[in-house]
Image (cartoon, rainbow, N blue to C red; front, side):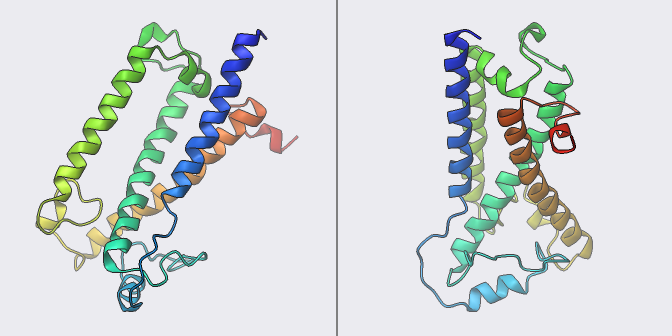
Length: 205
């Protein structure tokens, strides 16, 4: 291992830890004090309140929060969940040797591939994410916007439709699982070097 590659590895691990901390910070409670009546409405809401845990908030982030803050939390949960689901899919595509760009020259290890990605690739990535974020902010300005409803489904269906509620619950639960999964995958890669289909073998030796 050369000093340069060791330095790149340390920088990569530092960046990964910082990004995980930043992601966790997105769920930190905002300091807004209001009556709990609106929170109670969220607790009794059908969407996101699923067995076996029901309304899961062991740290009390929702305590005393107003409706606007709770909508912000739901928006953040959906966004993080969607990104995590895409990340899990991309992780295993990359680990399986699928590299649609740069003549498949990047490492099969997703974290090493991040380091090897040329500057032009990072520019495209940042601009693409920025464009999606800007579009999402514009969509939020429309009347009657519901958290995470970027395609405007609320204009055609509401939560009185049991099928629509089930669809939303599936997306939330899959997103929650994906957030845990991608965190575990990154941890395994950073601390054990395993990233493919045998990434958890360190735990069963």
